[in-house]
Image (cartoon, rainbow, N blue to C red; front, side):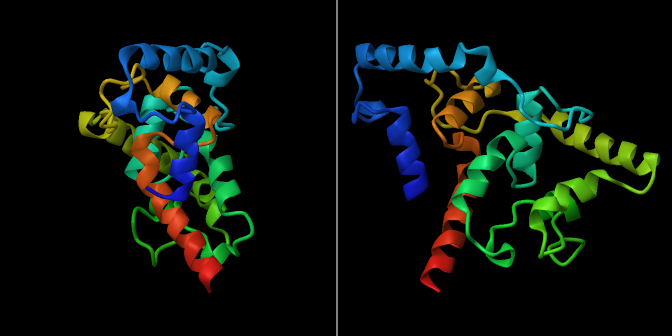
Length: 196
């Protein structure tokens, strides 16, 4: 794991004891801390401004759709911005190109403005185009393979509960396990730029 993920996990579990080495009592004590985070309604609120999206306020579908396109939901993007702060746009890891161009890197992505790609995608030329796009996204999230929890920590209390999982990781300035592969890509882009 990279430094970003390691630092995040230390904030989530300040005991210094790995999850696998914890006693049940230690895990329960950690759960009390985590429950204090996920029991606050403001921490669970959807912060996405796209209230017209069919997946708004549905963390499972939202995370599944963005993961399908190798991107983060809006609620995790401030952390992405923080990690890549100071990088020129053409050096940033562009996690939006697939959701914009359906995987064709040489397609419609404006490399000078990677952060605006989803906005352009949603603003289709016709109402029919917007409906067709929303239907495509609905098809993706109807597939159980795409919405299944990818986290290997099946003994976690929030396994399969995207609302609490995302809220907990976001609170500790990190990312759920299911999207950490993207963090590795971002960290590689930051490292490559800093070495240049």
